[in-house]
Amino acid sequence: MDERKRKREDAVRINKYLSQAGVCSRRQADVMIGEGRVQIDGETASSGMRVLRGQKVTVDGKPVRIQEDLVFLAFHKPRGIVCTTSRREKDNIVDYIGYPTRIYPVGRLDKESQGLILMTNDGEAANRIMKARNYHEKEYEVTVNKKITKEFIEGMRNPVPLKEIHAVTRKCRVAKEGPNQFRIILTQGLNRQIRRMCEYFGYRVTRLKRVRIMNIHLGDLKEGEYRPLTSRELRQLKEELERE
Image (cartoon, rainbow, N blue to C red; front, side):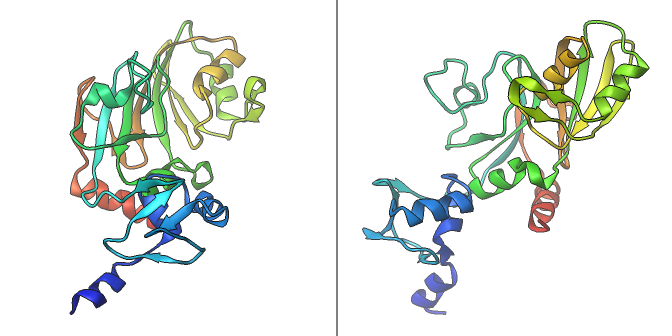
């Protein structure tokens, strides 16, 4: 196979390219392309154009490229660390990990929470995981400030209005684990969702730990440490994303 043919076969649609590079979702990329903000080798891109290996892509004049060596890490975020790539935040997750290549968090855990968060440089996979409409499961262990009642568990299982963010939660699975502890599985990622749900019923979260995202489990990963996903975890994750 000659080099020109190999380049054509490796060509990627421009909206997919921007998504894989972590710039935005494919839908957002289409909007940016329509606004004339994207260029390929200095030429304004149009919808449906493909990027060949070696071509230069820019958005608003800034170069963009796909990381050829994709990284997927499971990280046990400690309390106090902020899920942002902004260096203006002294406790940002990127500086805390200190990984040698550019990676970013998939979704968020609030500063007071701990547990599993995925870190990657695969922008398209990150966007797919974060889409609420895909109903991806996230599992948490939660401790609250007083004894849990049957009414509380039943209430948490059903839709809860969160007036502060003008949203209503989806039905979810909740199980009591101890006098003050419960386990909850969400398919949403609303801002401070579990804390707000508990507050609605007069409870306050004292400890919140995420232990699973889709097929990825925190397991015995120690606080502040990370590990690469296993080949099996990565294969299962990508198979699930491809089915959507």
